[in-house]
Amino acid sequence: MFKVLLVDDEEEVRIGIKNKIDWNHYGFEVIGEAENGREALDYFDECVPDIVITDINMPFMDGLELTAAIKEEYPAVKIVILTGFDDFKFAQTAIKYGVSDYILKPVLPKDINDLLEKLKNRILSEIAEKEDVEKLRLHYQESLPVLKENFMVSLVLRKASSEYTVEKINEMNIKLHGSWFAAAICKIDSGSIKTSGFTENEIELKRFAVFNIISELLEKHNIGESFILDDGIVIILGIDCKDRTNARNKMFSILDEARQSICQFLRLTVSIGLGRIYTDLEDIRESYLSSITARNYKLILSGNKVIFVEDLEPGVNNFYHLDRDKEEVLVASIKFRGEKEVTETVDSLFNELGESGASLKEYQLYFTEIISSLMKLARLFKIESSDVLPDKSDMYMEFNSFESIEHAKTWINKLSINLMKNISRKRTNTTQVLFERARDYMVENFNDDELTIQKLSDILYISPSYLAIIFKKEAGETFLKFLMRIRLEKAKELLLDSSKKIAEVAVSVGYPDVSYFSYFFKKNTGQSPREYKKKYNEKGINS
Image (tube, rainbow, N blue to C red; front, side, top):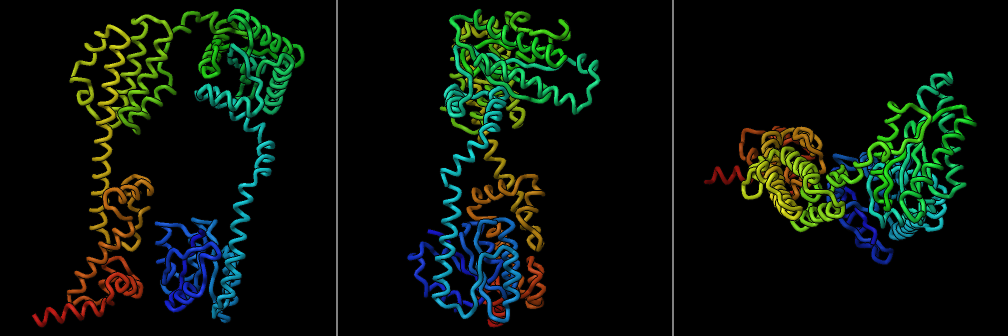
């Protein structure tokens, strides 16, 4: 069902339109009615309609102002205006605002029926266009080179699961298969650039030429992919060999062939850093980071070489460390998940650790990294370390007493869960405090006619969407309804003062437009301000 909102200051017009049309027959439902544009916009906080049928001439906010406000925030909403013959030119102006159609008054059922049929077909057509599988397939094929490059960049910058990586490789027909994988980084030597005398634009062209030579070689040997990243060319190699030594020799040979071809055809020297070799593409990010380390050895070994990191740092490959991806997963589980998920995350960290075969002493640095990360998170939420340490133990004494990986895992898991519980309590307290500050500000400043959720969120240094969530959680209603309730209660109180004029009361509660104040007051109390004032003043006299 498509949702319709009716907006007209004449109740009989709204009732007539609503009752004379078989909305269900056309696949529509009327979700609400409003007497003016300002009231209509309030509906959008709760439910965004597909179609708004609105009059042009209305008090407080007319149809054109409403149209502009809706189109700015909700451009997909279809707007139909109702107008008399005298407003025809006005209606034509509204079309420029993005109005979908208009109907002349008096409104006839046939006109509405025809319009609904037309709008329904238009909406369905837009939906079909977005879902057109063939068009999406063609668009995907056209975008594939860019998508492939984005995926390759993500491989070396972010860690992804093996399943996801293999799925994308097959889907995009990327040449990355084999039993051994490694990343390499190739950059033009700075000395070669200086002696060449190339301009900045020429250097970019030469870099692209280097990329072409590398791409052709990879195509020739059918063993990998390459792409330009910043001022270098990243190469990802996948080789099917029976052992690691053969894989290393083949990778080195192909990279050196690339280096020689670049020197021969472009008269440029390059240095290529080859990272650590892994059996799983999931580890290609680690290989890429180590390839950067390898190329940095050019400062010591001079340029025009292929530099294999394991030749220079042979023992480091066995060391297991808490990289940024693992740290982010651990922190996210503590901040946003439950006790079960935290335990599973810690288990996964230690399960991987157990497969590396290092000694307990070597693991102590890894434990330090985990604990440091947890303490940093505690500090971010202003939580004392003594509040999260298991059994109020001394962190350094406990750390030095670890007798096994299992012992360390149990202690770190307890620390993580304690931290999770403290953050959860802190967050609950924070939302309560923010709500109290927001409520106090509104009680003090309800007479500000420019008081909006945006203004209040700026004062509290939080986003409007987060403030809206806080109101729903703590007050059980929207910011706007909460503000209206404060203003209404204060207006009732001020109207009891016989010396105050209604216009003064209106300004005092944030409604400088006395007409809108009267409308707002009557809509929420069933009486006009004048009737309310008279009724309760008479009660006071009689009593």
